[in-house]
Amino acid sequence: MQSVTTSINGIGYSGIGYKTSGVRAVPLAKRSDLHYIPATPETSASGQYPLSRFLYVYVNKKPNQSLAPLEKEFIKMILSQSGQKVVLKDGYIPLPFNVLSRALESIEKPEH
Image 1 (cartoon, one colour):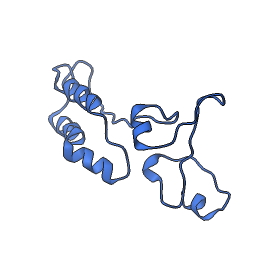
Image 2: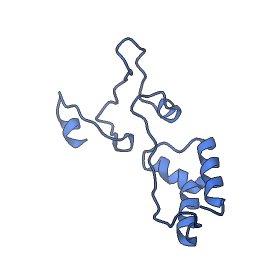
Image 3: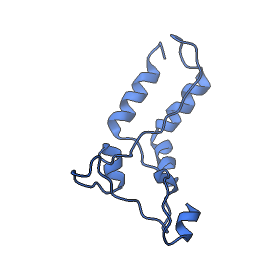
């Protein structure tokens, strides 16, 4: 991002969390005959922006076994209100409520 910021003709690809005041996120369309979507937190969270995606956390565990207590508490912290505040503070977009709810439900199931 520093190189893009300092070059008048600079162009690059980066995650939204690395965006700085010296760069502009470009509106995109899936096809040239479609409406261009601005890169905003709202269009990214809704999936409208063509390059939006979730960031995933992977945990190594045995199939059909519960998460170890430490890993389970770490995931719960990430999904908590305070964890999502950290996500926002670091320049990323917090998860939508329905995604948070499903994720919390899934880690509470015995087979997870």
